[in-house]
Image 1 (spheres, rainbow, N blue to C red):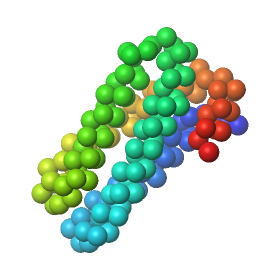
Image 2: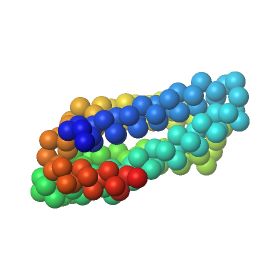
Image 3: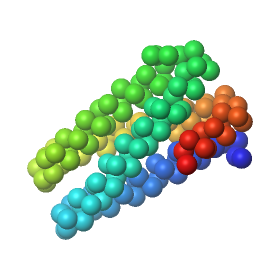
Amino acid sequence: MSEQFVYSFFQADHQRLDILYKNFKQNLEIDLVAAKRFFKDFKDGLIRHIEWEEDLLFPVFEIKTGMTNRGPTAVMRKEHGIIIFLLEQMHENFNIVTISQTIGELDSILNAHNQKEERVLYPEMDEIFSKDEIAKLVVALK
């Protein structure tokens, strides 16, 4: 098992989601049906990613650090709420006007959010999680 499991796994999932998001944006003006399919896959995948973080990673991190309802996971949860709101807004009103109004905000929050996770939170988790906690995480992710 890699000593950087959290970073490696979740960063790879960010990359997978980035490709879906890029395909969604590239198809917006050429093929709305394809764009909608890529958006659905992106939205579903990102919500699953957020659930993994909030249900599996954050509780262990908070117990180990004593930072419950504060610190980096509190910031991440707040940003997750904004991200999900934007995704739902785009999903409910899937048209060029709504998406054009929302996409810049989503781009901005996702870029900053992913950088905080990849540069700070995931490496910190890899440092403080025990091998047993990582093993349990691997099982839960399957």
